[in-house]
Image 1 (cartoon, rainbow, N blue to C red):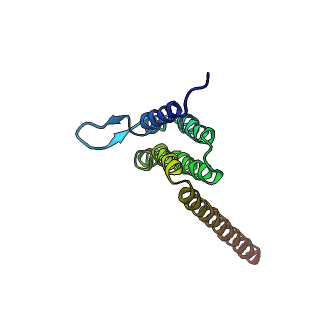
Image 2 (cartoon, rainbow, N blue to C red):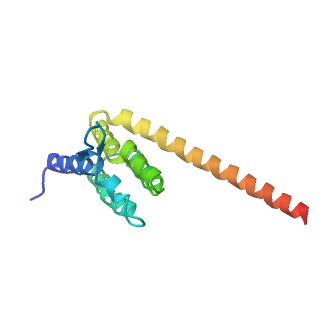
Image 3 (cartoon, rainbow, N blue to C red):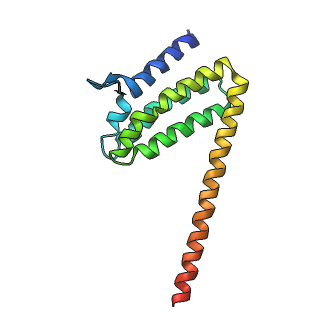
Length: 154
């Protein structure tokens, strides 16, 4: 017998809490989770955190969320994993960014206001793709100019 969707949603909420905000740092209102702690393990910590976080995206896909919302969730994880891989600063970023909490909010939003969430996610994902393409174009231009400058020196 298959479990009700409500149970799956509760499981991913608990996982997001464990990964992003399970423990309060004494004397502060700052909460940290397993994701930030795993990030302290050189080499594999961020990969393990990303794999655990990926379960939340898979659960969202199982719930039938639109591809644009899933893409936005993957984007959140990509940002978290890429920046989180930077030693020390990445771990601080993990504490502040909370990709899993953001993804749970996207699930909630997609369930309560699917059309608006899908549209907003499309705009955000498209904006990030355009920004990345623009950055690649700038890098390509800089490389070409550097090669021309070096060729002119020879």
